[in-house]
Length: 547
Image 1 (cartoon, one colour):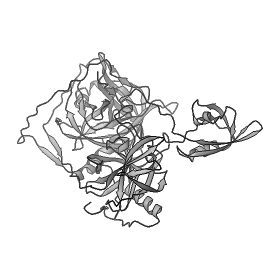
Image 2 (cartoon, one colour):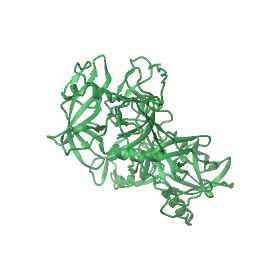
Image 3 (tube, helix red, strand yellow):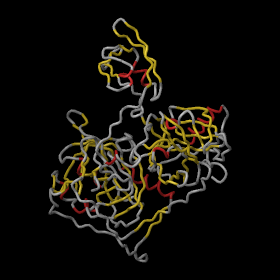
């Protein structure tokens, strides 16, 4: 069956599935490198932060904008500023001549106009090249366009704005090149993408631009970028605000260099005993999830742990739950040797991370934060909608099959304070409602649930394992590019120095997982046990024995 290769686009209606194309046939490239003639740059884990700091100021968030009506006109996408206030982005997100609002990481804004783009008549998903120009706004420093060839295995960094997170700061992801140029003319890498990232930049470890985000497949390793040399080659043609349906006749000369960049990934530590698997039952179904052993207790993801929980076949005792952070604290019946919190390390974007998942270790980097993820997909759902602005709230719609319908809430019922009551509750809570129906006053005990989830026909919604059910409603958390399944949440995360960084609390989207920091975990345990875990500020925290 043909692979679905989809431009990541943005929004719910601008999705392009390449169902009618033949399955991509991956080819193997044999690369002969004569090391004595090719300059090689070596980067360590500590080099990522200056690379990110160098490139990030030019990485922008954008959407269509009507300058007369002062209204937003499109979904969000990404881009990068280069020389003379030009912006490189993807063709499938812009229309030549239209105007767009530009948002920089430093909070500055600008107005830009889309110039030329290339979308071939026989395949409008190729080559996905577009150019923009800032019209209003101060002159900005642009990134350097790489003149170096890219090679199989080269490390690469993505800095873009996934729509799902809806943050003003970009998200960082680290990957490697799988194919420098596939048979459709794209760079194939493992740097994760999703809707909103379209047009975002891909950098080498010199902080130089090598590609622009274009498309994905279902597999998390299938991410495709437009090679930046296409923008260089057709730079003059792209100055005109037109759509090219064939390769422009006007082409510029592009000089290339031979250069490679290597990245030395730090070694993982010995995390034996820090991660265990919990088993419980939720709604009659067996549920497993990982957990972190800290001193004599176990911490995990509360929404995936039932009231009766087992660790290595022995029942544990639930001490406390924290719904705001989705944490549960458990005292095991057996003696477990885990990590010790001695100091708290506050992570930074670009930090290399290790996540033990029982019999393996998953790696990634810290992508962004601290950030707030508003309660949206984790909002308490009743299924009864009041008339907008009505006080007291009068119901005008009841969703069939919802908790409201099952408890016989009807259109026309008046429920004073309904909106406030729902905003302060979580799925699984029991809500006592006092409603008025004509001259009657009725009391209803209703168990709230998660809102109905909508999946779209886009690879970003269909990756293996899917999203965690509870994945938002958090404050002061961090995003990472660690690839986890929902049942692999709850386990510990360590940084490159093997210091405890926090706990994986959710798989948020195709390109993002959520980390709760070590300080939040320490405070939760201290508050629950009513006894302090030592905290010393300053140098990064080292956790337990050899950690």
